Length: 282
Image (cartoon, rainbow, N blue to C red):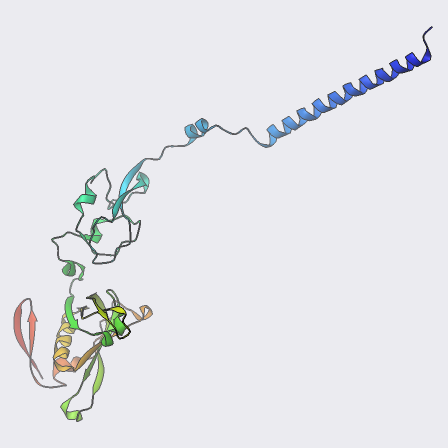
């Protein structure tokens, strides 16, 4: 006959074994449920090989672009490079490596006709060949380019630049005024085509850029007015206009009397296309 203590030990062992088995089953069930939940929430990531296969290939070509911003009148001296560009986004006037592989060398020395921004594709319409006239190419049809002498104190302190718009003010001292000065605006809303810049030292020892000659875009009538004004005036001043007041279609002149004889009679010499002619003012 076995003692009661041994029977109690066997019962306790059996109970513990059952609990361990139940605990193990619970752990396995929890792990399985977590695995299933992960698979349901996030699909397995694709490998790089699978992604490369599903991504469509984009056909590209190299486009000639500017490596830096270039303003009107600048000369190309290596500021070009090839930039990869989708074929579907190409414009017909872009310069591509497939059509002009030697374009970088061919365009050396060309002049910028219209400003080009950094990274912008370079188009032939914005370029002039080394043997082409820059000024005549940027001058609109029916317009004339007239050079006018200026100084720092008559050109908005040197802040007038190409493509700015100005008014031309004439200051004179008619004999009938007894030495008094007369000032009037003879031309308004005039585009500046070019302005030369020279370096000089001011009173404070600083180097500043000062324009000596401004080239203005004028109609033939305005060209005659400013030619007469340069002979009559003690000084011509350029007044810089705000960009908000610029109207490229406005060709106002306020000095009709200069050509009709309101100021003084006599003949005015006008030179056109190398030919000299005399115009009588009345």
